[in-house]
Amino acid sequence: MPVQGSLDDTIYALATASGRAGVAVLRISGPGAGVALAAVMDGRDLPAPRRAHLTAFIDPVSGEALDRGLVLWFPAPDSFTGEDVAELHAHGSPAVITALLEALGRLPGCRLAEAGEFTRRAFQNGKMDLTQAEGLADLIAAETEAQRRQAQRQMEGALGRLYEGWRADLIGALAYLEADIDFPDEDLPGGLLARQGPVLERLTAEMSAHLDDDHRGERLREGCHMVILGAPNVGKSSLLNALAQRDAAIVSAQAGTTRDIVEVYLNLGGYPVVLADTAGLRVSDDEVEAEGVRRAQVRGQGADLKIVLYDCSVAPEADAAVRALAGDNGVLVASKVDLAAAAPAHGLAVSTKTGEGLAALMRRLEAEAKLRMVGGGLPGLTRLRHRQGLEECRDALLRGLAQADEELVAEDVRLAARHLGRITGRVDVEDILDIVFNDFCIGK
Image (cartoon, rainbow, N blue to C red; front, top):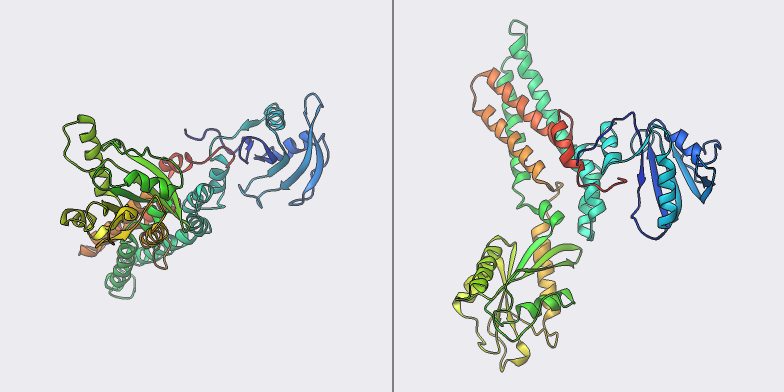
C-alpha cells in the first residue's frame, strides 16, 4: 500500500513489536512532534535533546494518567527522519500501548504512520539513500549472522558509496564530452572523446565484474535453496527431520507418501538455508504422485544444491544414474548406514536412526552454503532492482563505446548515469518508492 500524506503531517506509531513486553517504544515524527510530546507530558517543558527523562504519560483530553516511563527528544535535523522526533518508552502491555496510541490520535494534526513512512521520510530528508533504506529493511528481517553482516554493511552505505563513485566518474566523463560538443570553437584540449574511452571501459569492466557474482548477495538475503532428491523410501523425509531437528515431514515405510514439497528453514553457521523434501523419483501411474515427481524434478533443476540420497543397506554402491543426478552441483549421501553390511562405496554415510554421519553432513552443507553466499571485497548485490539498474547502466556504456559520434556517446553516458542514480535515489524515483518501502513494518 503506498504511503499517503505529506511531510506536513505529524505521524506516530509503535516502533517495537506488538504484544506483551517489558518496554514498548512509540515514535512521533513531524512538525508537531514537540507539541504532541508536551501534550502527553501534561504540558511540561520538553526534555533536553537526546537525554532520557522520566515522566508521567497522560491523556491530553481527559487528563487521565496512562502510564509512567521515559521520553527522548530529537529536534530536527539531528534525528532518524531529519524532522523533530519524540520517543515514548512505556510499559509494553497491550492496554498501555492502545491507550497511548489513542491519546496521540486525538491530537490535532497527528495521524498513524503508514508502513515504512519513518524511513521514507529519512530518505526524503537526505538522511539515507535508497540502498541504505533497503539495508535497514534487511537488517530488521535478518535471521542469521551472515544476513546481519550483509545488511549492516549495506545500511552503513557500502553499496551506495560504490554506485555513487561510479556515477561521479560518469558525470565527470560526461562533462568533458558535453564541453567538447557545446563549445567547439573554444581552445579546449584535443581528443576529449578518446581520453574518456579508457574511463568508460574501466567502469564497464568493474560493473560487469560486480554483476558476475553468481547472485551471492541475493542468495544470502533470501536463503540458499537445497533440495533432497532420491528414489522412494531412501530416507529423504527422515533426513529432513533430522537436519531440522523436528518432525517437519511425515515418515512412512509406505513408498510414495511424500507428494508435495516440504520446506524447512535452517541456520547453518550463520548462513540461511531453505531445505526441501520432495517426492521419490520414480515412474508412477498415480496422477498425484506423478505430479509430485514432476515438482521434485523442477525443484532440483532450480536448486542451489542437490542432496542426492541412496539406500546403502540395499545397494552398497550408488548406481550411475544416482551419481549422475548429483552431478557437479550435488552432495551424494548414503543413507541407512546402520543397516548396511559393509561401508558404502560412494558418498557421505549417514544414519538418521543412530545419528552417525549427520554432523559431518551438516559441516559439508554449511561449507557449500558459505561457498555460494560469500563473495569478494565488493558489497554484494541484494535485490533484483539493483541488478536490473546496473545491467541497464552497463549496456548503455557498451552502446556508447561502440558509437563514433560524440553526441551519441554523451547521450549513452547520460543514460548510464541516470540508471545508477535511480538505484540510490539521486534522480527521479517516485515510481519505485512505494515498491522499496512497502516491505517495511509499521513504525519503521
